[in-house]
Length: 112
Image (tube, rainbow, N blue to C red; front, side, top):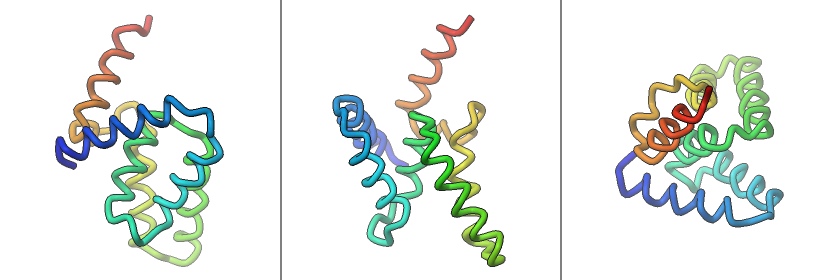
């Protein structure tokens, strides 16, 4: 991810935070996840997974991972594991997303 991408993802989260249309957000995120027309879909999903920790997204990723395991799809297994890693507080790839790093550090300062 580049800084330009991070800036775009910050704008996306502002739009998400400003709306009460959760069902539409779910629909769009699922499209990003499943579409071949969104080349950066995995990065977008990982950003949103870390930022929001949506249980429905984790469930979708786990379900898709299990389908890949069932069919011995090693590439698919790694793809979904890669996205699921973003749900971990110790996610190593946070370094690629300066805006998430700043948010995460701020959250850490407010924890007892």
